[in-house]
Image (cartoon, rainbow, N blue to C red):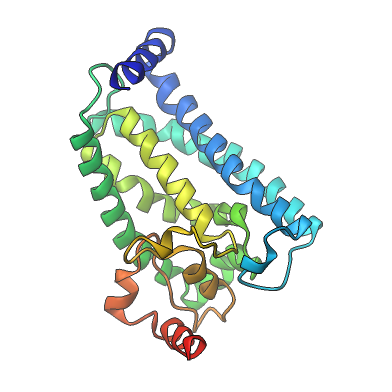
Length: 260
């Protein structure tokens, strides 16, 4: 497997420049994973398939889904892609490389764990700030247009929020200067996680049923369907920040009531 990965990476670095891989390559990785993981939830909503696992009974209209997709295409091309282009020199300065040899799996795993920890911390506080009155009204309310979220709504947001919370995603890589393949793996994991958190379904195979402290769709869906001043559940991937600061009390009380 290692030799196969190295052979594939050798082909990439031999045929594309460092800039092309870091910017255009990262954009392609993000868009591919985002839409392939998010679009199936639109089909589930429209067909009613697996509706018994849907957290809310309400469905989004095809018009609302189409509006989300149209804005995402605009945001991604006009905000995300230019941001990746701009970030190239920053990551190069911090030590990012794409050349062989590839990092060991121990190094990759340690860096990914660090990325999750620091992203959780920064995202939690950034998200709480976005729920203050002025920022919610003028910025974060765009994301909350969908009280019944579906996978693709995970990145439906005001451009200022994309920049604001995007900082949480990239601060870990910026601090460590990882190999590009590590950055791509981080993008894949982060996109799949946030799409799942917004999917609107709680399946028996949902990660929150197996991973300790993992938030998931049920945890984040609660955040979307309440008023901004009482929402709580601000965490990104794992829930320990909400537990430490008591911003998940409403959710835990509701869960306890349902269990009894």
